[in-house]
Image (cartoon, rainbow, N blue to C red; front, top):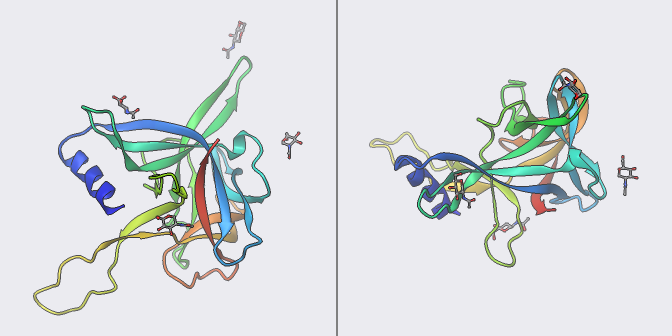
Length: 214
Ligand SMILES: *[C@@H]1O[C@H](CO)[C@@H](O)[C@H](O)[C@H]1NC(C)=O
Ligand SMILES: *[C@@H]1O[C@H](CO)[C@@H](O)[C@H](O)[C@H]1NC(C)=O
Ligand SMILES: *[C@@H]1O[C@H](CO)[C@@H](O)[C@H](O)[C@H]1NC(C)=O
Ligand SMILES: *[C@@H]1O[C@H](CO)[C@@H](O)[C@H](O)[C@H]1NC(C)=O
């Protein structure tokens, strides 16, 4: 999906508008990479005032706390074609006396929560201007809709001069389920990103996430 990534970057460079082209709703299907007993769905669990964690619930998805949207981050102003990456968005319901309104919350990977950890829990805070820019494999009839992040492989770096140039952009899927404290002190089994293996939290189990259109 390198081409898409660069297309999106090029779109930004040529001044394409930042858009919230939203698709969905989706369920987030969670399956174990090694532990095949893991088969369930993501759910928004209360973790503080208007803060949720993306928690794991076994079995079929049921209800709006398990429904998410995908906001594409750029599009071609002439054709309207949308480009990944995008944000996974949950809509926090605010129940008023007459109607329910919804606050969009883009998923972040909270890397600043614990400096002694290499585990970043997936969290939702109010607002969809910033978030974790994620992609998913959606091309072709056999697309598995698995969610991935792109990053630069620095494993080939040396201290030689002249320097060798940036490493390649790679697709990574370091999703895990980990028991941990999130938000203002809630203990959940949450979807998390692990920056490098092994995870510093021994409860973490590797999983795949897939966006399933409802
Ligand atoms: C789905 O959730 C509703 C409301 O909480 C509950 O009444 C219903 O039994 C659930 N259905 C399943 C299949 O779990
Ligand atoms: C994306 O949003 C822009 C601006 O609203 C619109 O012009 C374009 O058609 C949208 N693209 C799709 C695929 O919906
Ligand atoms: C709810 O509806 C009632 C009756 O129409 C109205 O008087 C009241 O101001 C509304 N409340 C809000 C918060 O909109
Ligand atoms: C999903 O498809 C992509 C692209 O073909 C592939 O790289 C990836 O390994 C697949 N993931 C799963 C969980 O099947």
